[in-house]
Image 1 (spheres, rainbow, N blue to C red):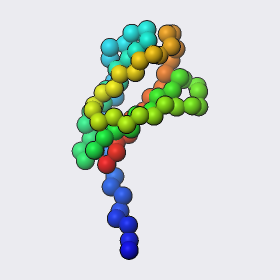
Image 2: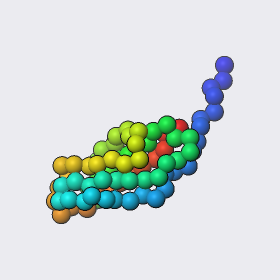
Image 3: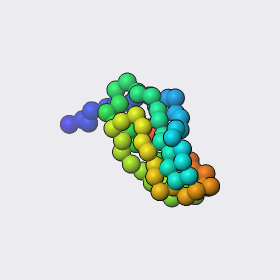
Length: 79
């Protein structure tokens, strides 16, 4: 019995940030053909611990952010 090949799809594009407040921000991206959902991770800039969440939409609002702090984020397609 052979496992089926893994399905690959492109990375999301047009990443942007909107609706920024002192403690929240909305992360946005464009749809990827074949993606069933997206996996989003974020962390405070320079830290190694990340928070990962599964997202089924093309945006996600982060809340409870620390004011005056830089964050890093990335999103990948799940096919």
